[in-house]
Structures are given as C-alpha cells and as structure tokens.
Amino acid sequence: MIQALNMGGLMEQTIQALRPGLVQQMQQAGRANPQQAEAAVGEVIMPALRAATPQMMTGIADIWARYFTAEELRQMVAFYDTPLGRKSLALMPQMTAETQALAQRILPQILQDTISKNRDALRQRGIQV
Image (tube, rainbow, N blue to C red):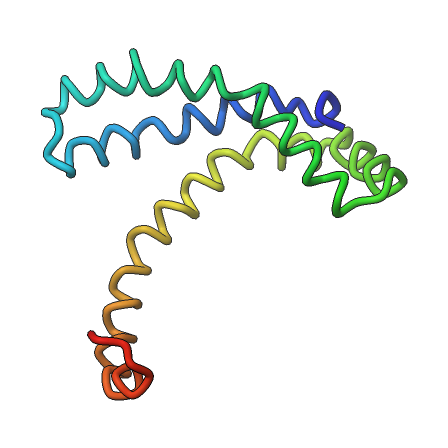
C-alpha cells in the first residue's frame, strides 16, 4: 500500500508544503529575520524532516493496518490507480497544508469568541479565564 500510494513522494510533497509555514513561524516567534529563517528551515529543519520519513512511513503503515482490512487496502490501491485517485494523491499534500493554514487562521478567533461567550460557564467548572 505504501508503494502503491507513493507515500515517499507524498511525504516529500507534504514536507515541501510545510516549508513556508515553518519559515513564517520562525519569523513570528521573533527567532529570526526572513533570511535567517529561510536558511535555518532549509539547512536544518527540512533535512531533519526528510530523515524522519522512513519512521513516519512505518508508523503510517501500522495505522492503516489497524483501520483497514487487506481487502479494503486492495480496493484503495485500485482507486488510487485511477485518474481521479492519482489526482487526489497529487493534490493531497497541498490541500492538507491549505486546510491547516485555514485552521490556524480562523480557529484562534473562534476559540477566543467561544471563551468570551461562555466565560461564566467555564468559571462554574473551575476554569479560570
């Protein structure tokens, strides 16, 4: 299944999709200027993420085996061998990165609004907000 899904290629695409966010996080945390952040991510963080790919792939295989039968995995391989399946695999890392960016952008405000609207209920539960 790992080979059929080109998981190594997907991991590399995912790592590449994470790069801009990692650079931005390093800058926002006040740890580096843009050039320093780009260099640090490219020279230190990206190689470390790539080095972890085999470990990640083993973990992913274990997770998939827990949730899918061998027959289901064969069906998935057949799907991913279709044009739509290949398209979804190609787009998955970018779509995941965009989804994560969206969540990072909108969830803090939603959380803040929810806490503000439910301050009394949270305090009744012993939570200081």
